[in-house]
Image (cartoon, rainbow, N blue to C red):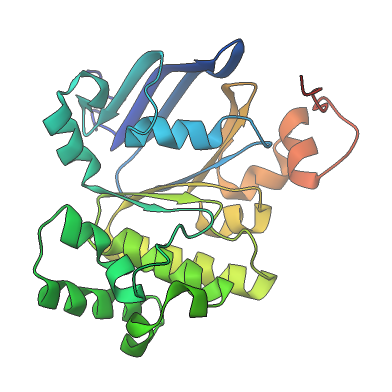
Length: 262
């Protein structure tokens, strides 16, 4: 284990992370330091490996090489029980909400509390009502079914589920996808508010440059399996990096070209 020059151990430290699927090298030596209490947004084209990066940290995908340290401890070197305890300190807002259609909203929100933390149902319902209120939803919404919710409400419920156990580390997968610009700004505002309230560290992946600017303390671009640029959100639209500038401004012409699917 090594720390930055200032001696502070990052909340999440990634070194030399690699992952291939057959001949396709998706992650090719990722290095990242994410200080505690900060928000990193990872941008990059479709298929650039953003979701794979998050899934490696969450233990959903096993990387081929590298180190993933949480509070200075290598997750990849832990036994199964220790790693499950570490993952239990994380929360995730999935791109499509990933709500369980067969459960009412409150049980969706409290799912982790009931399944992983063994909280009693009455206590879990109280906690669900409390976190629903934090994302601007009334307790009565807890009795609805996911199919009865609008897209914006589903995102809010997904966010409530992500924060229900007061996680130390939060992940957001395309949090504004499918939302109109106003609702996207609302969700971004809620994300910033809950991250600050919890004192959590956050990692978000997005194609939405406005969302990235609102959420991020720092931004990193992933291209061809590597981090090619990292900087503050104020520099995102004028990075001076030709690849980043083409991506952030949505230009057809530039160093990024469409790869043929085989």
